[in-house]
Length: 178
Image 1: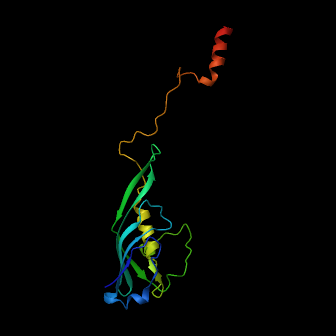
Image 2 (image 1 turned 120 degrees about the vertical axis):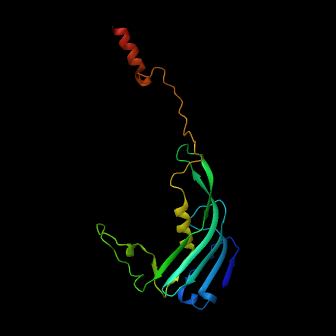
Image 3 (image 1 turned 180 degrees about the vertical axis):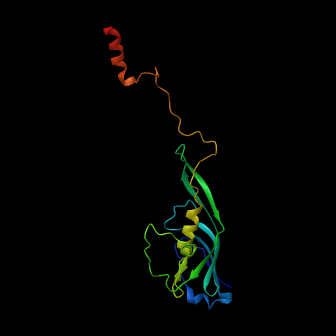
């Protein structure tokens, strides 16, 4: 198995030419990396490994990656660090028509065949984009610094809850007119 180790902090994860994978031992290429992804803001470099295997009419892609991202709590707006650790695997089908963009009407029903990833068999697999997508999917939708986060504390400065303080002068004038 061909192992390419990338230890610099530059973005040098190159696209893999799919036909060249068939020339690798076991038709597999494994990349070990420690890099910064240009579209993902992380506190630490993304590090781990990614393996791409050519299986005839599909690619078998698996990885292990970890990094730390800084998120903003949705309740109290404080920033906090969150560890992302993923071990995704995916089958990407090789299809001659994959590079032809089919614009589907918005109201068309999709079959399960329309929901698979495809690449042209003589094209390229971009490990950086794939890794970015997998890490982005792992970022939590509900971002809380703690499970019991109380949120933003609001000071209660209202003296009389029934009267808006901006109208207090008019309220006192009304009392004098009676």
